[in-house]
Figure 1 (cartoon, rainbow, N blue to C red):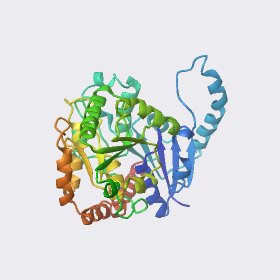
Figure 2 (figure 1 turned 30 degrees about the vertical axis):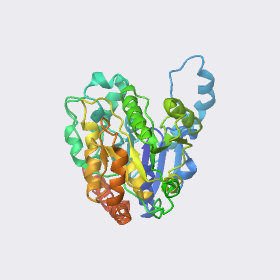
Figure 3 (figure 1 turned 90 degrees about the vertical axis):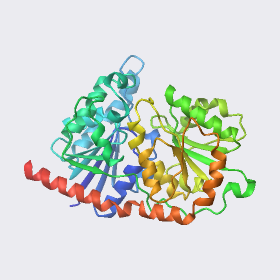
Figure 4 (figure 1 turned 135 degrees about the horizontal axis):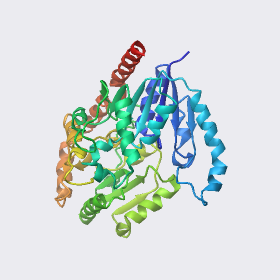
Length: 404
């Protein structure tokens, strides 16, 4: 019987989870995805390549009232069936994936408590906020407490940022967090499955103008919005084309375009601003290969909290490398800079002083080589690093069985 690796995702599954599950599957494990996402929030067909079995709740959680009773009566029986299906699962090990953490806590407490638990909070809330009071502005107490529960009840911890970030979690939202002994730093690596050849037919080859692209979420946080709009305004004023392929984690695919269009409405009449329909994770890579550079905004919550950006990573690093394009990023992304400097691909900017970006791009074009991009995505490839995660899982399970 195959060993069963289960990924419980409290929200829409991340591309990084796909890549990890795909590697486990290729090595003979049975992979199972359990997600609380609604079916219109993610492409289930896409994830079938990585998972032998997918259980989707297709249920939206909200406070019950007279208006929501018909929805509950309609979807409720299917949700109960979903919970019964979870009860049948017997994991070799399971990954609880946040950053919405209360469902991970519930699943651990009532469904998977007797199986080894690896906690993977995709974006660590304790890193994002300086205090509980600040965190309470965007999330309820039960969600804040759920994060601490997951940290303290997991047998292992996986995180995707700087190895040092874990040392900086105390004296922020919580005075102290008791972390598990088994911890692994595993980055959002590239995958051969996504990599495309270097595109020699860039748009700039034909119109002699620079084109940069942004993929990913577009925030609606006021502090971040001010910075994002300042950056966009400066870039567009320099006559640089900006192409945006946006997405949001909690909005249906069909509604995301309108959401982003409204959020960035002030730029819609600018001839250098281009908003595109979102594409699935594999389609987006060849699409963006025709641009000169990628762009990485940062989701700043407060300038008094630099740790969040200093230590973080994200799937953009692999997406841009897989597409064969270098990218420009906010200079507070120190860990990203450290990774890219290894491959001579570093290119940071300060959002307070970005008016000379066009000249810097010209200089960068003279320095960056296709060979650097190819070498980077070959070295920064999940196939070269996955053995660490598999070894981590095996050792964790052995220790769990020994003491339980």
